[in-house]
Length: 637
Ligand code: 13P
Ligand code: SF4
Image (cartoon, rainbow, N blue to C red; front, side):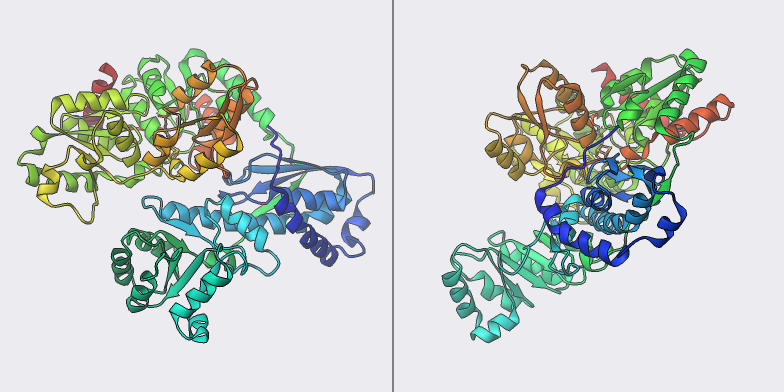
């Protein structure tokens, strides 16, 4: 698998002088060690390998470094920009004169490690606020000269750029206010001199905020500088959505979620670019050994034919291409749960995330066993709802409604733990997937007057909206601030606040932009996207439905696809007769789906051949029994 490491010209234009400078300071008149030890005609292969998990950014810059040192060096990126990688994963391959590879290595890695470090930290920050509407912004605290590069890396991590420099937006701070002789005068002068530039004003307390909110027309944004959480909450109430608010100052990964929960619209984080911790990457020379991907695939095929029908490998659509190529069945979560229930194979190896393997273990026959190549491959969305938190909510619902079991049908999206599926089984509820959510919710509402849907608020909202339920009849649950009993009684749909941090990244603006760029394009998104996105899109559906719609469309149809990027890129390759583009300019990858690799798949299979069952996924008996009740209700619908 080779990927072209294309990037916007702006990135390379900005990187060019930095590359010159860096090579000059590092190599100068020559890399003495390589010149002395290697013959000029020695050709070498190198692999850039991840030594830590993270998000890759800067491959085009690394490629440009090698090209600058020796234009005959061949560089092939093995992953896409913005893609999550795991330890040991090959990020890029280089081939060429040994002297050139070794001379360019350090500089190329310095760029790649810095930018990937920024992207990695940004991705963590973005994930930590994903259950809210807050957007993570960078600042101007970038390494001098690296503004374009550092901010590019923030975008690759899923963050959004604040102003690029002093000339594209006005940010009026206390020094400007004092110098101008007051806020009113400062804003008036700013508006007069730069009528088209956005204006943001920094405030330090609620008094200053009140003054900043009084402008008509309103300011474009107000920056809350170093405020406490309670001040921020009050600020959000005072602004009441009239002016977007940005929180700034001392934002750590630990604090970001609390700040986002106050309701601010933006959080700017200086540390993303001023306190960079480089992603650990290294270049290995001549590592094309037995572990080369082609050898691993060949070995896995050998084991598959050795084990015959006793082994079945299931692969979710978001898996890596090289893994999908080895799966006996590929599908969305509904297709795979059906497959798991029907197969007679002794061993199911599930290439997907943990809840999917658990579902297979629940539905499988007693003598079957289910293995997962990496047992730590979880799901961000599933983790937003624990049994404890859902049970606590059920208690509140029970008190408000008299008897929750008679009044509410609980439905858990299949992206949840076995314990939550069992909870639904015990309380007369069921499970749904993105492929059958509508049918399941219709059934649920025929059983009892209300539905409690977890963990994905968007799938719940999108599906119930599609059934004609008004937004006023929906209640978004806040585990820490449960609603009043009357509010519960007035609602028909209660939504858990969980989100998927991949699909949460799609925004209505991306649809508008792509429609402007490519008139006539059809937009198709996954129902885990926000309601505003699903509403604007032409179609929405599970991964299987997205594939089906594209397969069925006339050749030459243009599609912008809003789902996990591996599937989008695979569709691009498998349907050259259509024009398929990712909806987001920075396409999101599911980091945990990426944890399944050829090497951990090969490892569990090698162990299996030796009779050693590794990473078996089991579910405690009582939990499995009730979860099966819930799942079988779903499969019978
Ligand atoms: P599907 O049900 O469409 O396969 O989606 C599963 C998933 O994990 C989506 O993020
Ligand atoms: Fe979970 Fe989202 Fe990844 Fe699907 S894409 S496995 S919902 S985190």
